[in-house]
Length: 383
Image (cartoon, rainbow, N blue to C red; front, top):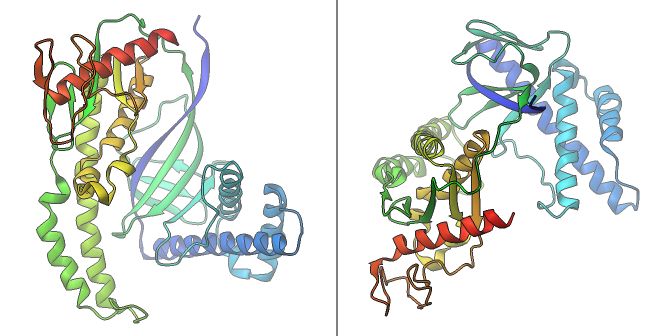
């Protein structure tokens, strides 16, 4: 009998709150930001005074007892939202102490993401046919496009508002997952992928995956709306932003949102196709931020490509199917090695054809993809 493990999965729903509920959401976003900033200021002051850092529980105690006593408006919102704001700051400090992140910053009213998290207890959160019940908010109209399975346990909900003004609820569930039998490491159903800046990738079979340059395709429309934004009152530094400025800003954000949604849809389809078709996928462990550096002159094309996001999707989808996602070191000279004889030849970026003394001549990226596959399979066998 296979062993069951506890796993988490979230389903994101679109919300359509009424005016009263929008006000409550805005209050909760603001209060969570306020509590976060208050605790961050306190921790920084304690450090300057030579006092010890407050633990997560002590911070929560300060928020629920001291802050709520001094600021009555914190009592109007969901109590779990306040506690989770404290815990988010504690997690930020933990990542900083582990050198996984920068030092926590104060949240800005205009720039910070608008969101809060609440926990499930005593049926305070329910998912209906076309509604979601939330604490202090009540029944909110929602598009329930997918229902959880009967054995899934509801854990928490994160409510957020994007830059366009749309509301979402990300509902987290916990469930027992049976161990998925892994495919054989010696499977021949494998493929290597090499990053291609003018497409998405070139695989070891010689197939090039094209991808729409969604940012480039919407560039003219985006530039037109951004020019209009630059003429609104508030576009200059230290100038009070007008209502028309925010209206125009939402128009700009809608274009960015459409670009992001198009890219996500395309990558989900492509990554699912590969995960269903192959047992082993080998890729290079690239630093896309470094590749998009201004020095290379192709930053927009790199980030419009979204290869890093595509690999993240491919990673978790293969793991869900008990398959293997193998990363080859980024310093491995995949483009310089001849996959036929193993000789090494240094190439410039402008050299797109690999010609070897052994007689092999072929596309540079195809040769690299074959080498990535060979090295990935070697790494997998050594694990």
